[in-house]
Length: 558
Image 1 (cartoon, rainbow, N blue to C red):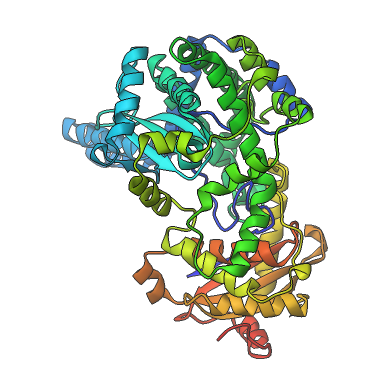
Image 2: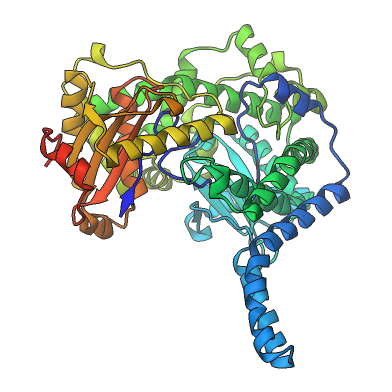
């Protein structure tokens, strides 16, 4: 196994070390962020008729499958030339084609953990009561996560043999942040999506966008965009994606904004419009404050605590309680816009609800008054916070162990400034980064590397972090020289050999190791530093030229 150099400079926008993206046909109270001029034009686009958007989505999804399967169909038609177009060949050929079409249909997988009814009967009873009041279809499952958010989606919607199941997603920090009235308003908004049947079209929108975006981004998987390296068939698909996706994105996001207004109106029929408006702005305020302060808070705890914290869900409410909202901050919350405009600006939503933003209290609920305390028992709440902690899994605990080993006993004055989430990168930037990664991988393979430029503090901290991870058996650091055609300069590259037995025992993957190392990199060097990682198993050898460099270089570990 061998992984070429992976991009590590903007993990928040699209984590490097992977070449896929997850998503869901979900409609959520997503936190907006600032927009560009192009995004402003997107927000002003009118929503197309539903029939037009549905027709475009279904037709584009079908065309995607045709593009995938037509080469296979040509191969499957070969027996006809040998045996003739008899009934048996046609039946079996058609059946095989249908099975392939079923297997390649765009789909998504959710890692959300659902909450059984018998473990949270009061919460389910509250949701059922709201559902009945709104005359919406019943929710089959409630899923929890660690976000300040809520969402609604439908599993198995579309061409599935399994029945559709409606899932309500609630973030534990959301339940801790909001009082019961605001939390009921948020849940009523999400149930409004079910009531308005938004998931039916939303499913096809999601799967169509995901399919053609995956085809369009496939060009960067090889590390370069050489036209000669792709077939005319692949280029034809990318050309279609380049023409179709911009219009489809604008049209689908305009539809999503319309759905948000409809869900708000549904919620306002039962819940207080002021409670919904307060929830929208408070969620936005908490998300912004968390983005600004969370990295620094985590780093401080990493330096002090060997074990992940159990009070993580209290961090953001404590931040908000310590600093009352100012009028300037309130105005900024109203102006905030989402770059990918699937949600309307808060000012527009509050205007539609008839809310006066200046009269809304934007302070978090005290714990005894929050939705979590009212709908869950203390024992349930503590157990759920442990289960859904950002550091609950085996891979996440290793991330924490590496971070603690790197920072424990160090001088905070040496720490780089905590990184903010980098701006969203466009496709051209992603391709450029992939080319540089490919070039760095080539440089490593041929030994075109020189000693790393890490400071002594960074190197010592990295050694301690790698020592804390039993999955990494050996590690070296180099600066790989890049050719002028790819921008020149150098890229920091970690060469690591990992234990395959340890991976299997912990049910982890190479991407998990990359994520663990990435989290350490975020602590040790400033944001924007380009670096990559080359992984191989301990049971594998290295290319001869790289092996020669490795033999002459002191190890970070092993």
